[in-house]
Image (tube, rainbow, N blue to C red; front, side, top):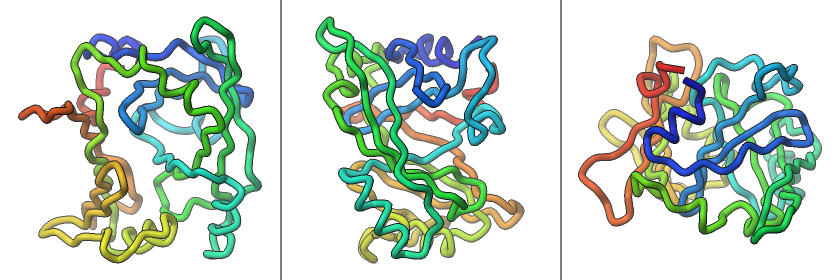
Length: 227
């Protein structure tokens, strides 16, 4: 079973397969203010993006939205992070029956600030082409990303790096009994300490219905095991 079929069989509406100008292909699961990106390349196509070609199938990247990629780039440089110049990314799509070019600006790190995680920022130049109403309705009625859980060797140290990367206020960081939670505007980032691990990794993503349902939908390794 391929990745798209796995999610389609779980009741999600997927966007049509699209091809980026950088050589990768994707399908999206659109949610209220976020989305899950199924990213890779088509069979028989030579991978052209080393940062994804060398990754195993699984929850791989955290992409944060920015309204101004150029300002984001300058702020990250001022904070002392190694960042690449702003990069243009695009793919073809359709909007109201017309072919359109969906355009983005991305800010990527030369050296990732948290070892084991792939983090970058994305500015959507025409978000109306991305959040289309016909892609927001899912058969399973799940429409919101509630929480992303990350395991890390040191939750406190990792939370401090995230706070710097995201320019978070101290009030947004909440220590719990067994974790540290960072409250973002539209979801919670939960950090769990795992002293047996040398690298940070995304453990799971929790999707919910609106209004809430007693049972959440969890994307994790067991869910992806059939790929």
